[in-house]
Image (cartoon, rainbow, N blue to C red; front, side, top):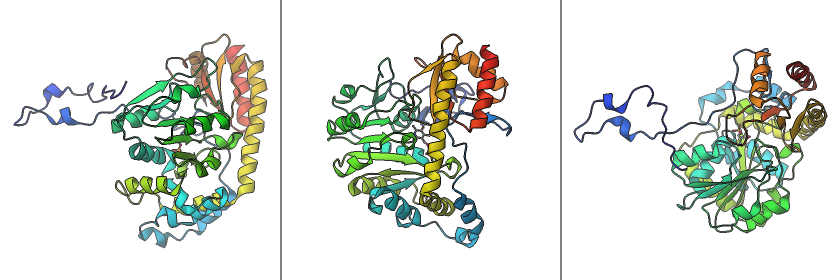
Length: 375
Ligand SMILES: *Cc1c(COP(=O)(O)O)cnc(C)c1O
């Protein structure tokens, strides 16, 4: 399972054709080969309905546009501030009632998670994560040479906590899980953290703001818990690339040591300033999350009426299977209608579509198109 060394370069030019050096080797034999993560499509056309990457359909907080136009570009001459000393760290600390020394800020939570893999998953034992989950985890494990084991979700796509209570090199799972949208109750999250005091447990809360209960309060009790969140979904700022991790100061110090050993200045000045503005507008943030949850409740009814089945979602998407038509066909037909949803050609989930919750208008267009395709 580890070190999937299939390589994209193989198909282009075989190693045999390379010049060999004095030791009979060619440079390609020593390349760090990886199969990269495949993000959802970002179509060039703009007049499409984009429900494939869980972005927010609503704009960032209104203050963000104002702050952007007021931003003094003279500041761009200088290297950015250290994230932990910025208004963004102060705003997050105030919002989550923790110290600025309990926050690590990165270029989207992908950067934060990647640094966390590099920092904490270093024991040689396998890291555990679900078989159906965010498909970046195995990519980071592969690129960093970290062994891992996938633990199967049950038939209802629930994580089985007992699977994570065997010796391991660390644990990571999203809550709610992606792409299923299934939420694990906090007592089960705590059971996993408590059973793994000898390793770091990372809870990836990319979708926690859409009705879940955050594990954040548990960081006071457990020094092995890292909670990771992002501005990309509930804060409508995927393009700004801001993510953050919260944990006890010692965990955050270790993360910073590794981060400052790779690239000191990851966060740009604009993201640091605009992020702070976004966090301070709590009312707007709450209104957006509420609206998306209301649209999701309607989507549950409408999709059921169209013959879809799904688990209850606590995220800004629904992971649904149709009773009669294969997911792939629906995916392709929707795409022909310029409606983009996500489909994976992967074991266990290849008959599911992940549909991001858009605006009410976008969702109406989706139901109309589905009505025609299925009718
Ligand atoms: C979207 C997502 C992320 C990463 O998002 P960033 O844009 O890098 O912050 C991380 N984990 C999960 C489960 C996600 O769905």
